[in-house]
Length: 334
Image 1 (cartoon, rainbow, N blue to C red):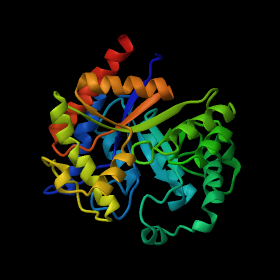
Image 2: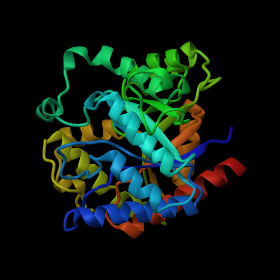
Image 3: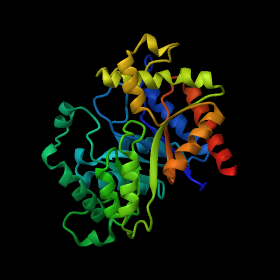
């Protein structure tokens, strides 16, 4: 099995009984922990109008995390580009890269990261999204280029900086775009697994080398809950199950502590729907998550695995990422 990187996706989860200030402090603590464990990168995802997620001002939070760490790459997984002006994003990430040279990633998605009404409040026009998103990526590349110094509109900071772009996707649409532009491709397998295999095949088969990347580079995001015992891991994972059950029920309350039995909460139909969405969730003790990593890699052979962990207890969350680090290292040595 080839070596692969492991990274962290943090949604800045807001927990019941905790403040948003607590959330941000926990995110920083997790980033320091991931850095000490030699995780590759720490990404934050843009969401809006969700009481359970506090990463709406993504670039601001990236600055906070980067300032509190030393070497781990920090970035967006991702910025929902049609929610913003390309120039403003170029300036924001140009500022971040200028403050933290060589450590900033810019992952880009086209989805709103919210509900339809909030998407309207963000000024999105759904009729032009499919044209707007590729155009905005090209605009960003132009703003970051040295050649743009003669243009009437310039990104300062931003111009001439090497800020790597990543295309994010939850369907096959962005796979075509990432392949065409020769950019790395990250898939949201942690909540939209249905088209992941097809998307990877499209990306690999149609990839066109660029000055940014000479061969395909795939990142896959999965859910991860690891603990010393399988029983504890499955109990901790009920926070994740409740979070997705709340999405199905359109109930956006903060993340809940684990429960003894999910069957007391969900119906059989809800259980089926949640587990379908969470099919790529690595839950268990070290040997179990190692085996799930192995099976996943045998099927998808990705370059990087990004782990998203919904665990209510902060120390248990830190422990989970430590177990995943051990599992990955053990798998590669085997």
